[in-house]
Image 1 (cartoon, rainbow over the protein chains, first blue to last red):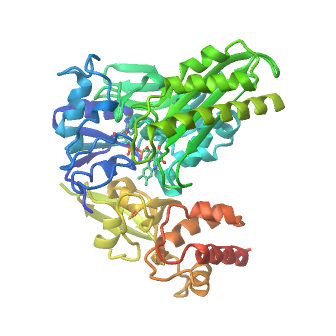
Image 2 (image 1 turned 135 degrees about the vertical axis):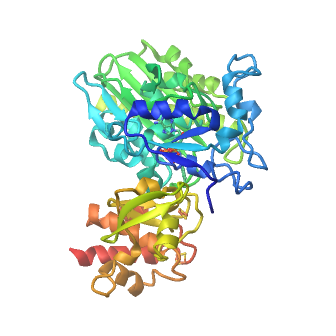
Length: 343
Length: 155
Ligand SMILES: Cc1cc2nc3c(=O)[nH]c(=O)nc-3n(C[C@H](O)[C@H](O)[C@H](O)COP(=O)(O)OP(=O)(O)OC[C@H]3O[C@@H](n4cnc5c(N)ncnc54)[C@H](O)[C@@H]3O)c2cc1C
Ligand code: FES
Ligand code: FES
């Protein structure tokens, strides 16, 4: 199966890459990392009947990119208004068949996992999912991320796919993006006019849509230093153990004041139950400051359901997803709580 | 405009002029005539096209030839030693792990990576390692047995 015609640009530095993106914006240009999303998507116009892999993957019988309307931010969102930048990006044929790909593979500085002096973890955007899965540091202190990496696709997908690609692709079910939100990851974006940071929860705007600007590259993700008496976990609910997109994914991060003490902070992120991964803020309202028990955890799980906005699709019905959000949130909160108390 | 890609395949250095959209599998099969690597789905689902790229099991259908510039590629053609099937290949033959054989090159390459990183895999490790490689014929059991046997022999 052949790819459409495009040229490939190979920058040696990040600023050079940003300049290439800016220069060719009018002709259509996309960033290439591992290619496990992009090179599949670019074949889609050629094999129009190719089944979409993710909820809300924007496809069209003729391979045109269209919006899955019910999943998108509403028209009252300025970005989605006629002429708004998200709508324009979505409807732009240059997005589906770009003239240029900017391949990041020579940018070694975007690779690798590093514990910083202040205790934070820096993961370069080009770090592969396999490297994350195998990192003892990530497994130990940012467990939900290790769980998500271990469950993504298959070994071959993990060997090529990158953290940056999984996040930048902005799919609601993305298996490392959901834990990144629960772990309060901070994304660093480089553009022609400088650098900015965005909280992972504020990055996605709809299926395949994000706040990234056309000349920007996601360069790294920073995870906060682990708090004492904290732990995290992610669970991917799917029909098979490999090569499956989740029906529901739940990531939980919990921190207590002390081993048997009240909740200092909690973050629950939900995947595949809305147009983007969702931070279930209501869980914090239920648990913060309280010593959690079984009843309270059940209440928190119910609250998480209120934040989910699932749709029916071939992976699961909305009513089923709702039940699974409740069940998995309760189960993960319990697991993580037991782990913290057992430490 | 074509680009020159320099890469080593099974120890032999090559320079190949490719269209930017050329995938690694097409470079191997069409430009170098190494048709041992198979193309099943072209979208990352089947693993038939697996090669090792700098030692890492890689689907060559979702890798551009340009991305393999400067890399060392190993394909199924490089496994035999002195014209003889290597231990892993022989185990596949002996254990009935090959029926139509279409998945075999990919299975052999992911397993080669597995045994280099983990010479004593548990059954669970083996099943996980081949979980991105589809086989329509064997039902996987014979493949797992062949790999277990090869792992035992290599120690
Ligand atoms: C068979 C198969 C199974 C899969 N299973 C799963 C699964 O179970 N769970 C899951 O979450 N995903 C899955 N995926 C999707 C994919 O593998 C992941 O999303 C992967 O992490 C993408 O990374 P990549 O480097 O390959 O991205 P690419 O394909 O290179 O890029 C993806 C998108 O992000 C943009 N991009 C990439 N890097 C950057 C950057 N640094 N800055 C800005 N933009 C960037 C690209 O322009 C493109 O739009 C699967 C894919 C395949 C082919
Ligand atoms: S042909 Fe590459 S994974 Fe199927
Ligand atoms: S032997 Fe036929 S596909 Fe595996």
